[in-house]
Length: 319
Image (spheres, one colour):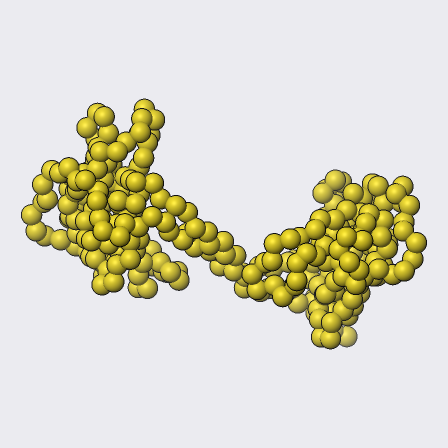
């Protein structure tokens, strides 16, 4: 007789993105506009230091800085680290070095990529120069990367008025995180039960609270929760909010209601959308039940059951 194999733990690739638009002040506007024109600008502080990339306030004195200067597109590597597995949207798609480069005429270093055949070709103190992108739009990526350089050093920083035609006044910062997520043993069982249109939590053997979704351990008692309990399917709205802003890629007309719902038998509330009732008629204590779509792995929304509202004392501890 062979032992049963343990259930497969779920895993899935996930992407978290938060692109946002930010406006630029005069210093950053001049810096990015200059990159588009193959010009590297920095700022000079009151004590004569030249900072590249430029900042608007002195990090030591907090004084406002507006004196723009032009520095060379050549410089010296001050430190580096080899990247043998480039990720998507990094400057190069082949192994490269991350380097801090102090450009000729600057007193601070700029972080960027160095195109080199291998780590043995990189060293602190090596001379490099900017490799400009073929198409430049007014972004840090206008510097495609740095490359080794054997020519003469650039001169001292020279004053610059920072004026460029069609100056860059804003950028879109595309924050993104790619990773593989595993919900673990407890939530894998929870997700698999949802595909069978059941909601399963886990009970703490000490305080007896039923966690839905289960967490694998009780955060209050610090002990494992292995006793699985089926809850619901109906529940009670404990609190809610009205959503008036339409989310991208979400085909739901606004306004709609998102609520915390305490399923019968659960020790805390989960969240879900309320449908089947005008948004201005949703209320605390409303009794609701899940609505499943054909082939759905989780409830699409919750709708009123038609039961009388729950008494406040029955759910006040779950708000």
